[in-house]
Each structure stands twice: as C-alpha cells, then as structure tokens.
Length: 232
Length: 402
Image (cartoon, rainbow over all chains, first blue to last red; front, side, top):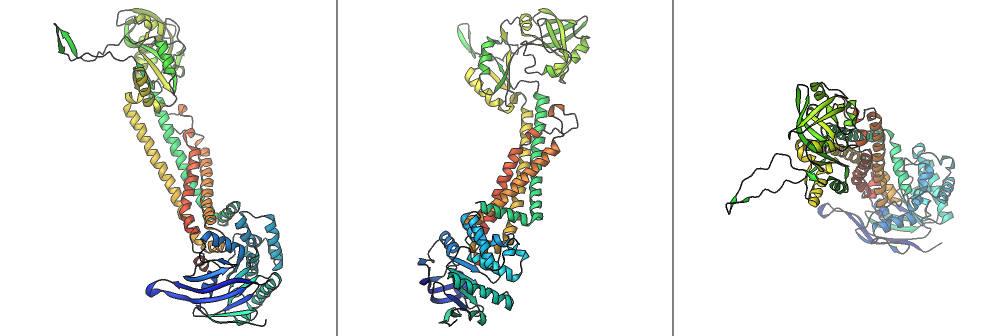
C-alpha cells in the first residue's frame, strides 16, 4: 500500500497574542506516505505535542494547511473533524487515558460504539480479536483500574486500532513504561505496521524507540531540523 | 443514543455514594413538595368542607326590580331616592325551566331550588323564631349534607314533615314524631311532624332553621309555583366566579358565587395556596442547584475522560447528551424515591372528612405526586444543561493534558 497519507504545509501555531504570544510552530512542512512508521523526535517544548494535536485534528493551526487522505482538515467544521478523526486517526498517549468505568473490551470498542450509538456484536468480536493480538484476551472483562501500566498501554493501542485507522498518532507511547514494557509496546506497534499497513507518527525523545522507525523527523524550536529515512 | 445512556449509567454507578446522596437530596425535596401539596390541599379542603360544605357554590335568584329614579307627581316628574327593599321578593317563577337551564351550564354538578320564609315554631308555651326553607323532596341533602348530620330520624321529607336542628329541638322539647306548629310572618300556620333532628355544627342552622318540603313551604308562605333561589354545586369550587359570570350574562338573573359571600375565606385560601406554591418553588430550586453543582464537579473531575472521548470521535452533542441524561436519571430516581417515601409516610393520615381536632389534614390525593416526579425530572434535566454544555465545550487538548 503506498500513496500520500498526510501533507503538512507551512503550519504555524501561536498561543496568546501581542507581547505574551508564544510561537510554538514556525512553518512546519512535511508529508507522510501510507504505511510509513515515522518517529517525531525533539526535546520537551520543541513543539512535538502541539504538532501531533494539530495532525490529530484536536487543535487548529494558526496558519498553514493540513490535508489527510486528500481532505483539507484546516477548514472543516468540528462535526466533520470529529467524524474524520473517528474513522481515520487513532491515538496512543503517554498516559493510557482509558475510561476507568469501562472494561478493557469496552474501552477498545469505544471508537466504534460512539460512532454507531451502540455496541454492535461485530464490534465486540473485533475488539476481542484486537485484545487477543495485544495478548490481553484474559483481561477483556477487567476494568481499566485493574490492569498494570503495560497492560493499560496495550489496551490503548488496541483501542487506537479499533476503527482500522490509516494513521495512529502516538505521543510518547512508551514514556511511562519501564524498558521491558516499552520494547514490548514497540514490538507490537512494529508488527501492526508491518501486518496491517497502518501508518504511525510516534513522538519520542528516546533514540532507541526512534531507531525502530523507518523515518525520523527532528523538530527543534518549532521548525523541522532534520527529516531522513533509516534502514530499519 | 443507547450507548450514551450506558455511559451515563456507568458514570452514576462509578460513584455510588455521591449518586446516592444526590438522589436522597432530590427525594427529600420531592417529599417536601408532596407533603406541602397534600397538607395545603388537605387544609383547604377541610376549611372549605367545614365552612362551605353546607353552602351553595353559586346562588341564583330573581333580579331586583329596577328602581325608578324619575317619578310622576302631579303631572310632573321628580327625582326620587329609594332604597332597595329588604322584604323577600316574590322569587323565581317557573323554577323547573330555570333548573333545566342552569343544569346545562358546564361545570354545574347539582341544582337545588329553595323557598325561604320566616316565622316562628310554637310548641305549647315555647316559641322560637326560625327561617323556614322549602326543599325539593329527594334533593334535601343536595346542598346541606343532612344525610351526614342526622342525630335522629331521617333526612327525607314527606308532606307535613319538618327537619330541625339539635339545639332547636332541645329548646322546644321536640323529638322525632312529635308535632310542632309553624306560624309564618304572613299569619298562616301549619302543623308539622318532626321527621329528623340534625347537628351540622353551624349555630344558625342548628338553632334557628326549619326545613320542610317545597309544597308545604309554598302553601304556608303563599308562593305557589315559586322558589326564592336556585342553589348550585359545581365540579370545581374555585370556578364559581367564572360560572356565575357566565350564568348572569346569559340569563340576566342575580347570580352570586361563594367567593362574594365568603370573600375573606377566599382570600385566605388563595394566600395559603400562594404560600404553598412558594415553598414548592424553593424545593424545586434546591433540586436544581444541588444537581447543577454536583454535576459541575463531576464534569470537572471527568475532564480527562471527556477529552479522550472527544479524541476518539465523541461529538459535542454526545457529551451533552451523556451529562444531561445523568441529571435526568438523578431527577427521575430522586422523584420516584421521594414519591414512594411520601406515599408511605402520608398514607396513614385519615381522610379529610374524618380529621379530628389536632390532627394534620393531609390529603395524599392532592399531593401532586405525578407533577412532583415530572417537575423534578425536568428540573434536574435543565440543571444538568449548564455543566453538560461546559463539558461539551471543553478543549480536548487541554482536557487530556489535565
């Protein structure tokens, strides 16, 4: 599977106004093809999370354009963006952010259920399959609060995959895990990327994590400092 | 929106202590609402029953003849000043036709003609002044509930019989079956047999009134085929002014609602009703403020979750729906719990007609239970709107970061 997945053109993001304005992104441009696994590397405060939020349609750029699957995401209204996000983008956060009142299976089903307005049997079966893929079949009926940190992150990955998105945005997905769990999570992401062709943009400042991606985009002080492919 | 309902239910279930407290708070307010409605309704009913129970809701009489102001005197007209006569008028002719006309008015429940006159009851050396009322046989208890007040004999009147009050019977040394003479102001006399003795608890009726069949009254008062008034009972007591106005407008008769003859009582009942309304409004405001503040805290506590839900495709409308539904569920549960509590607590109170001195006149039937549940659910739903809107408008990025 190939072709353009995401295109970012001259994106700026400014918080505040006048003397207190903070220019976080200063003209960021790049493109990602379908199935790519990209590491977004940068120090804290470099603009990684802001960029991910804009790409995930959770935040709007001050100027510039973002297009995904040929659709302009900078001018769409909130309802359109919400639906687009639900269908085409998955998220994995540093802190799992599971819904605490729901079981692992229900958490995985959430993106499908919130779209359909109910928990369909088909979605339940897919959620169970995804939990099996991340090795958590036996924890399907456990509440989020009953899972370990690594397990929670694997449930979060399964949730991100639920609607078969073309792109998963992962913001420091291993930042809250020990080395062993971090490597297991990366193994999982690599496998998903390889088997399903899902694209990944993984924000990290961990070189070992970045090394497992096929491409590295370095962001520094709000601009792209480097963008190179690696021999994974 | 089944999924939104599930989410709302889970939210409520995840903090059972908080939810139980909220429901209990709402239930307490609903209990107060129902109790106040039942008490004020019961009190009004008791007052009306004791004060107006033996009166007509509307009284219809022949209009006073017009008073001429220009009077011909010796070939000229002079301006005359006259006072309305205090002597009884001839009354209404053709009462049957008027009865049929009045019965056809919406809201009229009972129609009962009455002929009034005055005179004295005489037994041996003892004489007592009385107001004589002629009633239609078979409708003796249509206005004054003799059937509930008989101490001896029967409330049904046959020709030549009379019903008198306990005090009058004692004064005249009468009992059922004894004879007594009535002498009208016009000098006519008739001998009557006491068919029943009642105690209404109303001084004027118990000690200075005699009730005879209409034909007997018409004969002794020399008013053949006429009645003094036609008395009405209505489906809704408080509709009396409106019904009276309609009858007066379309018949030209002299129509008086009870609110004119008992203006102070009417004002007191209205003030009492308004006081109850204020208390009920405050109870509802308590519900709304309580739920709004609790849900405001809940949405603040769940900011992170709301952000995640938004990230994974929950629309603002979905978030709004979840939190509004939480408010509605709390209102409904609290409303039902409060209603059950009120029903259990208030059902042992005796019916209003059996209330004794010192007892609370609580009428659960007037507790507005359905209204209380409906208003509470509506109030709770509206109360949830503000926090729900705040939740729906959360910036998902800020919410997730927090």
